[in-house]
Length: 294
View: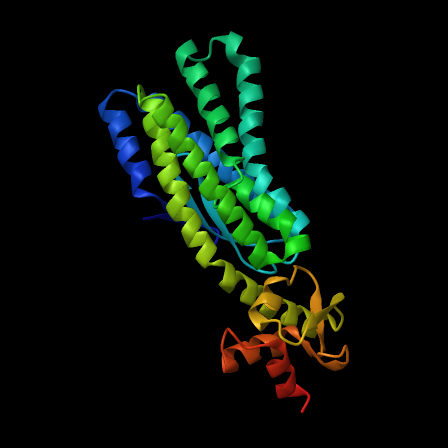
């Protein structure tokens, strides 16, 4: 549900947040609901500020009970260091709020139980968002770090598997504690969220990779120069497997090696992708290179 649009950024809120806010008000926990909302907003504001500092444009913020999700435009995806910085800015804001609140808790500005709740809420948000699962901040940071070596598609797949493991672990832990309190129910809800949200992120990996290729082509036209990497692949390797290895920030040039070690030809990122689109996902690199070197 769209809540507002601020300086070109759409603010969307999950219906779960609205239901929880209404429940908090009806049960007499208005102050705590307000404090939790403030923690979530400050978490996302930190992402917003971090994106602006490194020159990215924020397009959308989605708010969930324990954090949110952001969509960034521009050249996002080409610089993993910047993306790690943006991802970790949210949890950093939560832990900073914990430290500041702890320092002022003796000044009696608010009821002690409300102060303790605010500290606990930010601590939970900090820990939860650092879990190595998509779409959480920890998962995004891990995906960006792994993309250096494994490529964006393979990195997304690895973090998706990590997220499924985390979700399963939360379920097992909740069952081990015999669902004795609201904490266990929250763990089950978090596991369900991670499972389905992770699947959605996994499906988006291909489009993210294609978007990166388009961004690199635009950047090459704009600057006239772009760092490159070369790969040597066997003639029978599938083009899809090769694309999965493409990392961020570099334009990849692929040499195709034949049966006897001879070089059959070379192709660039977009030629491989075009070849897959024309010949199918199972197309070999030998078939693709023949399209451009015949």
